Structures are given as structure tokens and as C-alpha cells.
Image (cartoon, rainbow, N blue to C red):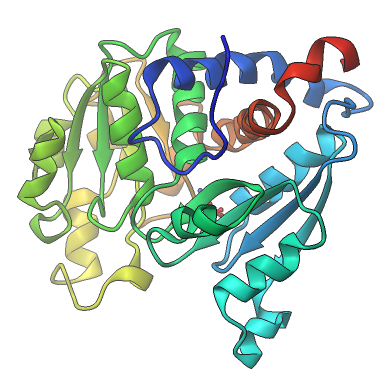
Length: 312
Ligand code: CP
């Protein structure tokens, strides 16, 4: 199926058929990471720049490995050691890096809309790797890929998202994606972190995890995003844990074959018990593993789609 997009800025306006194209393409890339030589020449000669203005362990490394497995050249911009600290603007930073003939810019920024802004003046493909509390499209894609791998479908599944929904770009992108795919989504969290407006997305909102978890196929835990909170939005961490932490006792209320997900980084013993995070029910590391194939698919579809048959 043709993929006719210059940028990947979010899931909200990405049609279902294009989401499926990315997921299906990612299936074909999984095998490359199992080879002795984990490399194909599909994006040989392309230059990609990871522009992360916020910390990252998973997304940045995953994009870097995805690019390298497709034989692209990739460099990592490090804000702390860049001229941004001398006052260079975002626009000048991007224009200067792009003048080195980049083909794609992968952007993470704490300000919502920055990847969209950059896409208005640059020539390269732009991929949103997380913009503030707005969207994290490749995380939602790898989450959907992992759910489909485990459950063989997305439609009709009961998916529960738990925690700091308000500040979570992962929750927003997942809500957009999974609702397009026909999943039944419910969100649970403290009232101040789960505002009523979220009901406008057509999801069920609950404040009682013990009730909402019943019958869930997938439980997606989120961390408290203290870096985005301006004030205390729940009384204390101990109370949060008592009410919203995923413990073995609570997990037994979900479906027998339910899976546990988390985009990371996890806070062991806060939103999830360490035992559950490490249990066979957890697909947290599988999500990270799948992130490479999904990001390979995104890079391939945006930058090199037509060449695969002749170069693979
Ligand atoms: N899931 C995720 O975005 O993790 P990082 O912040 O480590 O990239």
C-alpha cells in the first residue's frame, strides 16, 4: 500500500490504513535484527539527525539502531554540548544542521508542537519522537505492534491505561491509535491527572483501578511525570501507590491471559510492583525490542520506500 507522507508528526491525523502499513512493514523488518549481520542497504547514503532536546534512553537509541540497521548515517545532537547553551535559537540550530544535507530530523522537545513548527521551514523529513505532553507517535506504533503480536488483533480488545494520563504523550497517541483500530479503551488515574475532557476522546474514565481492571486484556501503566507537573496533583506518593499501583493482587482481577505494558522508564514499586514488571505477563522489554522494527519501518516508508525490492 503506498505511504504518501513527508513527515510523521502524530497519530491523531494519520489514517488507519497508513497505521496498518507501518505495522505490516515493521513485521517484515523484525527478522533483520535476528541476523548475524544486522544490516540491509535500504537507506545507504541517507543522513539522519537525532535532535533530542529532552533526555531519552529508549527512543533515541532505538532510532539510532533502526537507522544503522538500514545502513543510513546518523548523528546525535546533544543539547548540553551544543550552541543552544550559548543562545542559538531552535530555528537556527535546525537550519545549520540541515545545511549539512540531512534527509531526516528526529525531534524530541519538551514543548508541544515543535516538530510541527520545524516541518514548516525545513526540507528534511521530520519525525516526532515526543513533543511535551502532546504526542509520541512511534511509541504508540510500537505499542500497537506489540499488542497485535501478543493478541493477534487490536479490534475489540479491552485496553486499560493507568496513571498520569494528563501529562502523557504516550497515552494521547495510544488513545488516538487504538481507538482508530476499534479497541475499547479505559483510563484510570487520580482525578487531577485524568480530567473529564478525556471523555471527549470517546474513552471510559474511572478513578478506581480495582474496578476498571476487571476483564482487561491489556494494562498499560504510566509513570508520574513530575517534570511536567506545576503543583501537587495528588496528596502523597504513598497514597498514589495504595490506590493506583499495579500489584499481583490487583492484576489477578484482569483477564487470565492479560499482558502488562509500560513505555518506560518504570518506577519499580511505584506504579508497578517489581515482581510484576519482571514477570512473564510483562511485555515491557518486548516493546523496546519491537521499537527498532517499527522505527525501521517508519524510516523506510518516509525516506526510501520504493527501493526495497531492488536492494534487500
Ligand atoms: N518510552 C520512551 O519514550 O522512553 P525514553 O524517554 O527513554 O525515550
